[in-house]
Image (cartoon, rainbow, N blue to C red; front, side, top):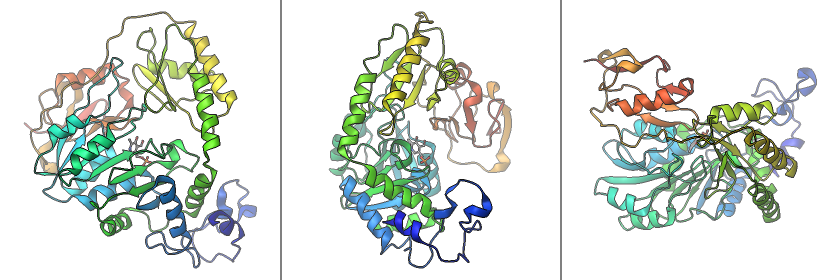
Length: 435
Ligand SMILES: Cc1ncc(COP(=O)(O)O)c(C=O)c1O
């Protein structure tokens, strides 16, 4: 509907955007022909009562939510709005330490306090899911919100239903960052807010996402108010139409076929590399830890064979599959991995992980009180910056925490150029509190 309406929209555009949908003059094959923002007759994303309300209702139906919102600024904007609508200065959130940096940023903007749940690692150095028992032991009278990422980048899910039950006994809402779980339609309906990255695992254009609200613990109006603060006031209708088309595309037959292709893929026979299979089998995690090559080297070998993986880490590579992958693509990945595997041999494996939460020393500093320090000389100093590897964008140090040897070793043992920090001087330098 929205897509057809856009296709048929042919008024002379004396309005934004500046390209005026003039494909002929531009001579470029980008979707200028469909690109408008909120002109008369096309509703208002921040107060929808027409075609965009219908779109939200379609999302709602898909995820069986109470209220849903199409998002055009990624999962990030949903996370910023959700957290800031639930907590404010002085409140405390209980969050999994492996949350994405957007969660950390949202909490910082809200000026809320944080308590962490440190997930365990499995035998491959990959975070396990968060259990209800971990949440239970972290809850106290100060906690106003629980935040969990499920599934993770690697496809690991947490005990979301049991976690919700535990938190709801105390009337505490649960936010699930399901940026990687848009295709898990039947999951997390017991949570209070679920943010889904439609663009990550479904056929929607980059930046398309959705927010689902369930239950009565989160005020819809507050969420809408915060959303309209954080989200653009010039939403792209190309993105919105792609959300609509994405929803229309989904049918169970296509997903059955996708699962058949995936199950065939997992019959792969490797001697040295290991294909890990987590809860979301759409994330194909190829573990290199038992071989002499790193995940980065495997990623390069895949690239040499014309395959670009989603991400590489020290000991593994993630290949993100979706309902749009062809049998040929799966076969190619299988053949190339089998070929690479035949050139490798078995090696010892020592996981590179951070097992302890760094100690927290202070909350905030004045810019005058920080100094640039050589990264490898800053053990024992208080970091004034976040440091994360991107992807996955999970901070390994947060401002106010003391940098310890484990963190420095972790950075040394990884590809150092993969790290980013608040002020962007990594890997050489970092801002710490002056001593
Ligand atoms: C777990 C998680 N949450 C949130 C985000 C942010 O999503 P977006 O890039 O759609 O804003 C990401 C992005 O990679 C992510 O991995």
